[in-house]
Amino acid sequence: MKKVEITISFEEEKLEALEFSLRKEKSSVQKKIQEELAALYEKSVPEAVREYLERKAPPVRERTRRPAKERTGDLDGKEIGQKADTAPRMQML
Image (tube, rainbow, N blue to C red; front, side, top):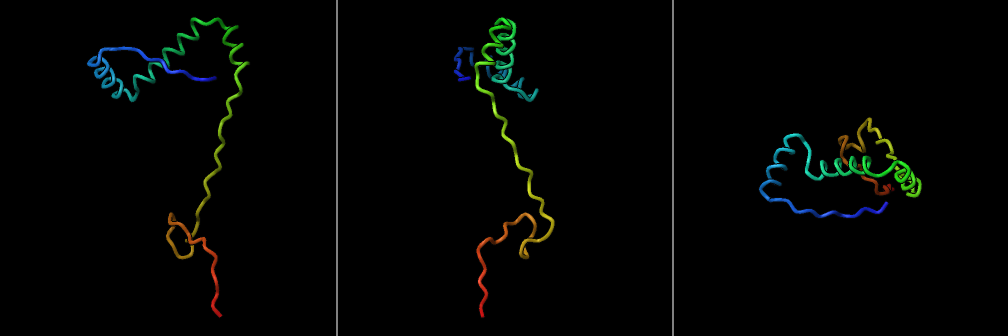
């Protein structure tokens, strides 16, 4: 579903104090507001409406990650972690 931004007003000093306190909990104001808004949605919107909206929305595709290539030896005399020279090599006759 398309997302929209919500703008609210709050006293600056209180917001700074709240941000400071939430950082100690490894959280943020935005994260807490999103959690509370989701809870309000679940509580206030009837289940049938939520199900309808979920069916109507296109499915969310999860990105699959390819496993990292395992490096087991040196790469053309370079240490592991350095990029190997991938340019074609020419032999002198």
